[in-house]
Length: 188
Image (cartoon, rainbow, N blue to C red; front, side):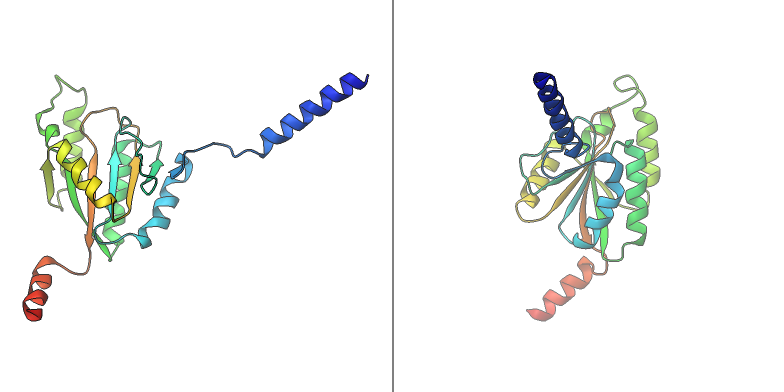
């Protein structure tokens, strides 16, 4: 009887400990996919010139740098890209400098099913921006260098297509290079 009572108490203790655990245990800096839009919205006022937002495919590696915020969206790539476009339409303090992998230009339906549709959708979505095609490794170097000084937010998607990640360097939304050059001339 005492043994049975003790077993019940141990079971209740275990159940109470399990019930007190968070619904999902996440690595430092990661976010549950249910609240990715809210978490991104919280970050936006903090982000500015020289920060980066990466929208990446499912195989993108988890960074070793704990200062990089990785958010698992659980969403499709185009849904996240459309959300980012909507965000850029209403944010006055930032504007995007968009980079994509140059390798994407060499992919076709023979290599990756559905890639032509993706490329057409992205081209239409980003038509109002300048998109720079840079080799994959060169983009990684730019992001790595920036992450040493500036915040990087990574939005991981469910995309299973290679070289579809989009790398966005944020620029000042209310100032441009021409006016900066004019200011620097005055200072000299």
